Length: 280
Image (cartoon, rainbow, N blue to C red; front, top):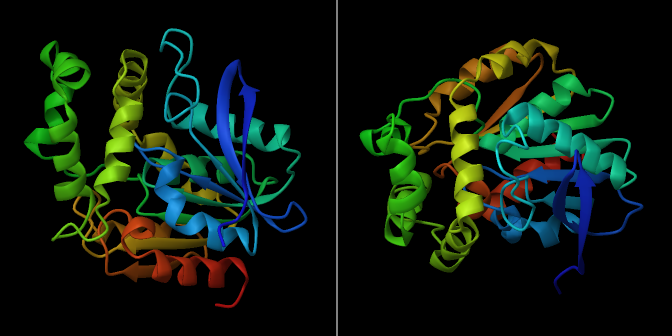
C-alpha cells in the first residue's frame, strides 16, 4: 500500500520550494535531492519503500518542478545556492540532522551541504554525482555556444529531443527503466519560459565544479558512492577517483546507466537502505 505523501511549500531565501514529505516523523530523516532537468519524481519508484524506514523529504530544487522559478537576476542558480536552500528547507521542516541522497547535480548539492553544514548531515549517498569535469558530446555542447546556444536551449529544445536525451544518454542501452510518461512530465515542467531560463542559468553554473572538488576533503559524513556501470554522462571511471578523495568512502557499482534509482529501483533500495541502516 503506498505511503501517504504530504505536499508542503516553504520559503527559503525568498524562494518558494515545494517538497514531498512521506513516512513517520519519529523515524530517522532522509533528504533526497534530484538531478538536472528532472523533478522530485525521479525518486517515485523508491519513496514509498524508503518511507517505511525513514521520514523522507523530497524537494523540487528552486527553478525546477513545482518550486518557484525566479529570474536569474533575482536568484543565483548554482550548487551553492541549492545547498543553502536545502539547509533552510531542513530548518523550516524542524529537522536538525538528516542523511542525504543526491543524484547527479543533486549529488554535488548533497556533497556541498555535507561539507558546509556537517552538523546537519549524518550519512551521505552520492549517486552518479556531478563532481569532476566530464566529456560532452556535440549535442550536449550546442546550448553552450555564444548567441545561438541560449536560443537552442530556450526555444528549439522540444519534446522529441528531450525524450531522445533521456532515452539515449541518461538510461542504459536498450532504454531499460525509460519511463516515457515520467520523462514527458519532466518536459512539461521544463517547457515554460521561466523554467527554461532557470535551467539554462543552472546549466551554465554547473560547468565549473572546482569548488565542489575543493570541498571533497571537508566531508566528514560516512559516505557511500553509487555509480551505474553504463553511465554515458559521467563515466564510471570517475567513481574510483571520488572514493579516494573522500575519507572512508565506499563504492557500489550497479549494472545501470546514469539513473540507478529509476533503472534498478530494487537493487538501489537494497544498497542504499543497508548502508543507511548500518548493515554493511
